[in-house]
Image (cartoon, rainbow, N blue to C red):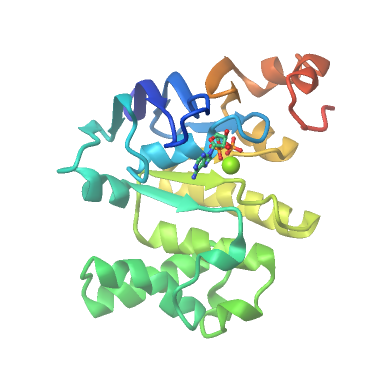
Amino acid sequence: MTEIIRLDNITYKYDDEDQRPALQDVSFSINKGEWVAIIGPNGSGKSTLAKTINGLIDPDSGEVKVGGLMLNEKNVWSIREMVGMVFQNPDNQFVGSTVQDDVAFGLENLGIPRDEMIDRVRNALDKVNMLEFAEREPARLSGGQKQRVAIAGIVALRPAIMILDEATSMLDPQGREEVLRTVKEVKEEEHLSVLSITHDIDEAAAATRILVMKDGKMIQEGSPETIFSYGEQLVEMGLDLPFP
Ligand code: ADP
Ligand code: MG
């Protein structure tokens, strides 16, 4: 199995003296083609963990490897190309004035030639079923459509892994369903690995493996069936998943 992500003994504390570390001795790995979900109460360190994977946060100790490359100053830009991130708020991630400009933005930064860029943008929009909205202003889309455009922007860059940090939590049930279906489709078609941080039961159930975080630590790991079988115990840990 090829490891896409490997974290070894990551510890990180924000510059705030009397706080406990946001991450304490966290280790895990994600293999190529795997879909890992991270669940855990608010403040348990999930977003901080996501940010250590693409170098937005530099841990106090421990090692991060992406695609076999050690995350350090020299490799941070190569690693960012391998890691696509979708965030919670659909309105905070647009830079283009049309959907297609927005998806093209990352490719322009990489200096991809114009013809290839146009191809990749159209192809990515087609994959998320948003090609018909290519010329629309992002502001005039629904929340679910906005998140699908964000996913197209990632697909166009052909990363190794897509990280979704509560990407469906601000959406209505229809938007949530659309985005989840899109993630499932692009994961298969693009052979992507996925890391999804979520409070949504359907999204967690789509994963091959679930990790549970609490107080900056990984406290459980297992298949969705195993983790869901803990039922009330997880609710007692402060998780707000509506268990079946
Ligand atoms: P989650 O995503 O699981 O809700 P976070 O990773 O956002 O958790 O936060 C983990 C801990 O780090 C919390 O105690 C939070 O208050 C703290 N924290 C998060 N961001 C910052 C920051 N920018 N400065 C200081 N503390 C922070
Ligand atoms: Mg968070």
